[in-house]
Image (tube, rainbow, N blue to C red):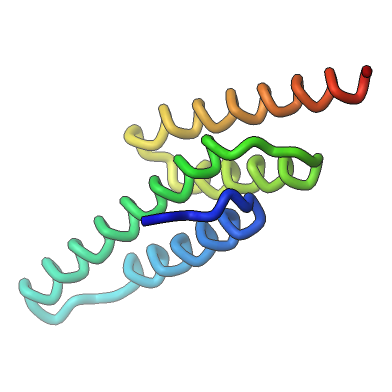
Length: 109
């Protein structure tokens, strides 16, 4: 899946995925097959979520708005605290820190 290097759009994608995950979490499944289907859909959404976050990590923020978008993505991930996501959240914050240092260095020139 090719994702844009646009942090605003990535933030929007993550918001959409979060909404779909919440919707799936609130559904009651009438049968085992339906429950398995819902579980597969949730797994797919979680993989998409990780893909979007990975793209955000790899995208340099060139403005303070872009840095805020990265922080908003981090905050969205913080709501669902799962062990699998701890490492990816930490890497996103390190990416934000790198961006802030780079922007500060450019401003000093």
